[in-house]
Image (cartoon, rainbow, N blue to C red; front, side, top):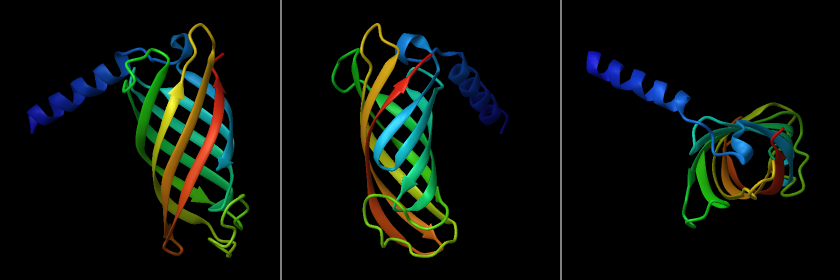
Length: 160
């Protein structure tokens, strides 16, 4: 058991000691996204390959909707500019559904909880504080009813 705690402690230290691979090596970026969900987005790079993403906007899953994703970035293109990413996340929808697609997904006014898997492409132009992204995902609603849907968005983030 002590070895397990030692390994976990080392992973946490390594995780927080690596610098981010975001534009200009900055860790926190914010921006907008259009699609489903549409709204505001915030990305916090933990390491060179891992990041947390938080989205707030409107969607077929709820209006407003909150997302939280944990992403892994992959150098699939052997490029310093473009990366693939994927990861799991959760979604909370409040109020009635108000997105652009599938407006009959939920018709009640209660909160909804779902899990999602997201896959996308990051484009990080060299010498600019910007990140452009395109992503798609699968959303599975767990409560109050079970259902599923597809997410898709394009967006941009600025790293001050």
